[in-house]
Amino acid sequence: MGMKRRIMNGIAIGFVAVVAVALGVSAVGAFTGGGSSAAGGPVETGTVTIPIKGLAFAKGTRTVAVGATVVWKNLDGTAHTVTAKDGKSFASRNVDTGATFSHTFSTRGTFDYLCTIHPFMKGTITVVLPYGLEPK
Image (cartoon, rainbow, N blue to C red; front, side):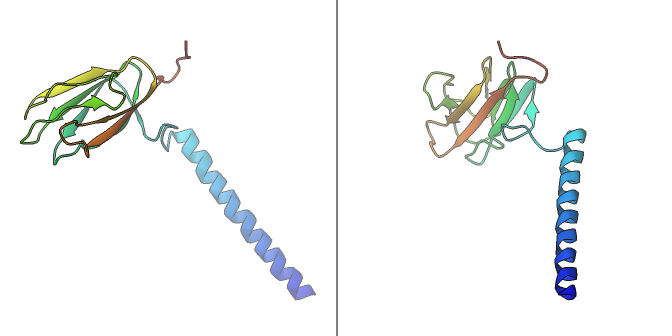
């Protein structure tokens, strides 16, 4: 029984050590600003540019603060649109090669969008409150 007890104590000590290290790493990330927002990415402010290239919205899924302006710039050799899936939040006309479309997000929410010419082109803008502001 003595040997079995030593093995069980060793396993218990190992488990406690693993949990302590995991909690320590998590705490360091929280205090140093590591990780990402609850919405799935770093919160961007100001003007955020999304290139349209290769028949895709490059880095087209973003998290922005209320008040941020998103600018889509067409770097492809063909026209595209930037249209909210809900059909009313925002919609561009055809964005020709080298042209841009922008929209300023004034309310919180999740805005899925696509190119109506090439519906397989999709993205999502998640809009959150800037740090330190309370909802109205």
